[in-house]
Image (cartoon, rainbow, N blue to C red; front, side, top):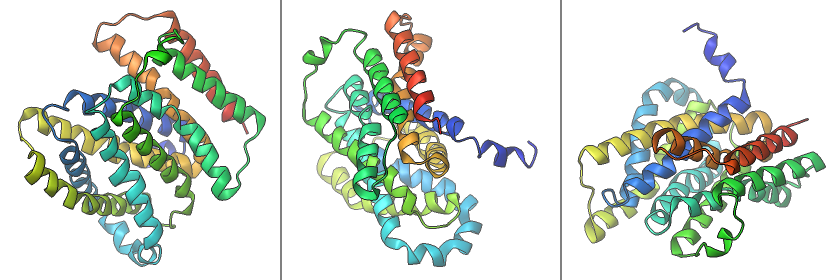
Length: 298
């Protein structure tokens, strides 16, 4: 690989955001699929512990350089670690034990709206008309796919404790996305390494409680495979891609790409589960694409 290929790739925010959201989409499916074999806090703890170990040595050179700056900005790093690492993913995994993926993705589709609202409340960042129209269109597109083109299904979706937990998780990640603008001026690898380690430390007492009071991790092929996937793809790769995307285009535009989650979910279901391509898939994808184009225009 040429030496300058990574920097060039790192300067395409929308490609980075698409990749990040794709791996997050699979994360929801994995979390739901292994819910009977893997306890939720255990999955979250080993996800971030594994990601911390994998990213630590590549980030070590940058950590030595950035350590003084990181210590000066410890409060914002603690906030990012709590909202974006420890709380968000743990509540998602716990919620997926009590609800279905369609409800979880439906909650996730609210994130762009929450990001816009928090950006206005915290930083007074206004949204122009094209952005508002783009967010609305992409939201309708996501709902079209989730509800399979039938609005009456919305009334049949029951709200339970798992849905509430996932909604709280979505609020936390919206806060993480907005507060990334206050991130210290350190290398991206330093940022993810520090937040991953702090997030793992925050989860440790809850993991110990779950292991002794509820049920321990049962290490088998399923558990190892799930932990390896969530530690690498939706953790290291997705967070680096999403953080860079927010840095380049802002939280409001970056959050809009969360509406791609039902698109990727539908594509994977068609490709791997033998499901059929329906009219609402095309309608939803078209609305989401149009919404992203409008909302990302300068």
